[in-house]
Structures are given as structure tokens and as C-alpha cells.
Amino acid sequence: MGQAPEQEHPKKAFGWAARDSSGVLSPIHFSRRATGEKDVAFKVMYCGICHSDLHMLKNDWGSSIYPLIPGHEIVGVVTEVGSKVEKFKVGDKVGVGCMVGSCRSCDNCASNLESYCLKIILTYGATYYDGTITYGGYSDTMVAEEHFVVRIPDSMPLDASAPLLCAGITVYSPLKFFGLDKPGMHVGIVGLGGLGHVAVKFAKAMGAKVTVISTSPNKKKEAMERLGADSFLVSRNEDEMKAAVSTMDGIIDTVSAVHPLMPLIELLKTDGKLVLVGVPDKPIELSIFPLVKGRKAVGGSCIGGMKETQDMIDFAAKHNITADIEVIPMDYVNTAMERLAKADVRYRFVIDIGKTLNSAS
Ligand SMILES: NC(=O)c1ccc[n+]([C@@H]2O[C@H](COP(=O)([O-])OP(=O)(O)OC[C@H]3O[C@@H](n4cnc5c(N)ncnc54)[C@H](O)[C@@H]3O)[C@@H](O)[C@H]2O)c1
Ligand SMILES: [Zn+2]
Ligand SMILES: [Zn+2]
Image 1 (cartoon, rainbow, N blue to C red):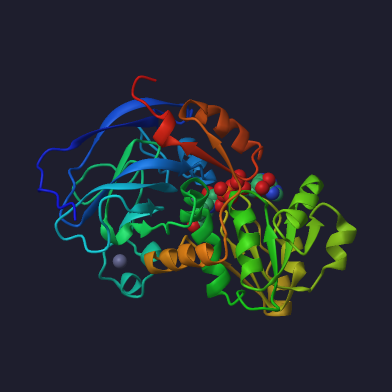
Image 2: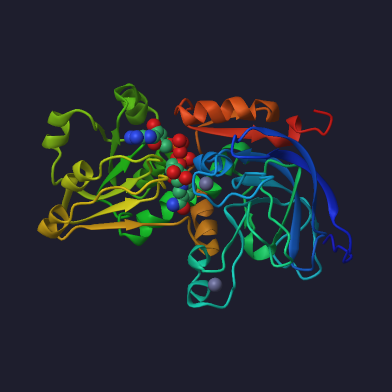
């Protein structure tokens, strides 16, 4: 067990940051806190690029603090553990997702729902307990309290597992909570991007019948043949949409921009649920009649708690679920962001931090 002596001084770290809402990333030297007694420190090997990183880089939600080092799909290998760490040792494969802190005492935290804690501390761009700003995984090292670290099973590839830490849990959690995880359920997945493509895989593994709803007809073949969807609806094709009215038990909507909800609500059966996980920067119009007529619900969902995140990883390992990724070098990140904005990625960029981030760049 690599027991670390308590250290007073922060540690040097290196990463890539945006300095303003242009969102352009460039190298930055910064520091991380010394490994505390409940902390796990690790060398970052890979970090996925979530669309939330792009929203945050551009200050779409008005909450960004610069310099901003994004990244919340972080995986790596443990280099140091604090004296009170129980679950991890040096050399373990681990990951950190969207949060690195919560109050640990409210009702949400007591129910393993840390992502709904009012005092949640996000992995980057948030203020930590000690007053410092949190920095994400586009960097060489990471440190987080043990409670917010998950174990990546040895059987899983580190690069393609990284996106599960945000994209994976964000779709797994509502599938379970809204009861869409049962064989025979008909589940619609809207938006076939990073979240959407893993949602198809999880819903299929849970036994549901899965229909992808997308604006791009050219994604039909791969959705069905590669990802295993049962059917595909082109949302701009009125005939196809009409034929599917009142057929779905639930829909997970991962779209990152403002889009019409009414056609999706029409697809739901009585008591169906439309769950929004995509977070557009502007409000979306909602008419009430279609909800009232079918006792339908529109809801939201935010990542998932730490226990459920570990359950999701273990479920993914059991069912061989990983993300379909394009691995890129660190200095490609700005181009990757431009491509992500145009939905030009199948389906998740993952930065090879371990091999391509070096402070000489
Ligand atoms: N709720 C949460 O906890 C949570 C967690 C992670 C990400 N998110 C949010 O989910 C959204 C999706 O993230 P992602 O990483 O999967 O993004 P992504 O860019 O990989 O996928 C988004 C998909 O939406 C589609 N899309 C974009 N604009 C559209 C439009 N106007 N109409 C129809 N389809 C459109 C794109 O083609 C793409 O397939 C983002 O808003 C992100 O911030 C939320
Ligand atoms: Zn994310
Ligand atoms: Zn709490």
C-alpha cells in the first residue's frame, strides 16, 4: 500500500486551458493540491471530450471561470494514495467523472444521489473546499477524494471506458430510474452523439427495444448494424414520425441544442416519459395539452451518484459495453472541438493524454 506522507505544498501540474470564451485551448502550468489523507492521486492516461466541455469552454451556461481546464471523463493509473484511503492502491486503474465533492450529509448524499446535492463540486470550474478552483482531466495528473473515484475493471480498455464516466452514467441512470431498463420496454434515443450512442448500447443490454430518433438519415445503417438499434426514425420525416405515434414507453433526449419537443411527446404511449439529459443554452417551448391527454411526463436527469456510477461501470464490463471512440493527440483538441460542434465524430473523442501531453508542446 503506497501510503503517502501528508504534504504541505501543492504539486506542479500541466494541462491545456481556455483563457476566455473564445474557448481556444492552449498549454498551461498550474498546481494541484498535495494528496490528502482521503485522496487518490493518479496519472491521467485518457480523457474523453464531452459536449459539456464545449458548452463550458464557450461559457454557454454563463458559469465558466477562466482559465478553464476541462475534462470529466478521466481515466488513469493510481500513483499515490492518502493514509486513510481504503479501496485503492498504487497501480490501480481508476476514473473520475463529473464531480469531485458534495456535502456528504444532506438527504441526496445519504441516498447515494450526490449529483443532486446542492453543494456538489464539479470536476472543473468549481470552487473546492479549500477555496481553490477545480481543474479537469485535460492535464497530466489528477487528485480526488476516494469517494469520487471509481474502479475500472482490468478487463476494460482504458481509452474506450473513459466516456462511460459522464456519457455512460448520464444515460444509464435515467434508464433505470424511469423504469426503462426492463425487457419489452420500447425506448427512443434522440441524438446519436456521445451520450446517444452509449444509451443505445445500455438500453439494448437491459433488454429494451431501441429506436434511434435522429435528424441524420445517414446514421441509420450504423445505428442498426454497429450499435444494435432495432429501428430508426428520421425526425424530419413526417410520415415516419406519424407512423410511430404512441409507441414508446420512454425517450432519452440527448440533443445539445434547442429543438422541438412536441413531435417527441407524440411518440410516447400513455404514461410515457420524455427524459431530457441534453442541456441547450436556451429554454425550450412546451405545450401542456399533449402531456395532459396521455398522462405523460417530461423530466430531466443529471449524471448519477457514485454508487450507481460504479454499478454502471461493472454492468458495462459484464456486457462488453464501451464507447466508440476516435483517439486524438492533445494538440488536436481545438480541431476536435470544431468537429464536435458540427457533430462530426463517431462518437466520442478521447484524448491520449498519457502519450501526447508533454510540457514541451
Ligand atoms: N444531464 C447530464 O448530466 C449531462 C451529462 C453530460 C452531457 N450533457 C449534455 O448532453 C448534451 C449532449 O452531449 P454529448 O456529449 O452527447 O454531445 P454530442 O455533440 O456528442 O451529441 C449531441 C447530438 O445531438 C445532435 N444535435 C445537435 N443539435 C441538434 C438539433 N438542433 N436537433 C437535433 N439533433 C441535434 C447532434 O447531431 C449529436 O448527435 C449536451 O448538451 C451536454 O452538455 C448532460
Ligand atoms: Zn459530460
Ligand atoms: Zn449533499
